[in-house]
Length: 195
Image (cartoon, rainbow, N blue to C red; front, side, top):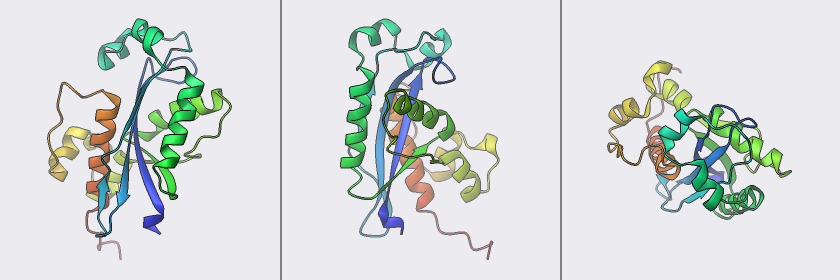
């Protein structure tokens, strides 16, 4: 049943393209739930974390995108194991006894870092081995090609608020915007041309 699910929209920023060689720099998470009115909505709660680097890889181009320096993270970032424990506890306590579903806008990238970090610290991934990709979902729901699934294009197609250019690539800001995309996609009428 749909009401037995909490979609957890997650965005991460990283110091490079792959986990294990590069670092997960920050993470934001925002839940999407089914309301009593039968509509999906973006919850007002959120979590944001920044992490101490644990791998040597650091791409200056990635840093230019997210604007978080290695020096800042080495001083202010969270130790990874307690951070992963806190994230798992937060997600479970905010899923209200429903199944957690990992959601990403390009989910393979974000999920790979989260899954790797849970394995690295010897913990079960609270999201399991699968996730929902809003880009792929938009392809099906809106009959779009892959290259048409940018957040900017979906904002226009779904009539969402414009993104704040100063906040883009802040993990929790991006997770919240992604949650708005997901809720809008879930609330679209079901396609009848496939019957």
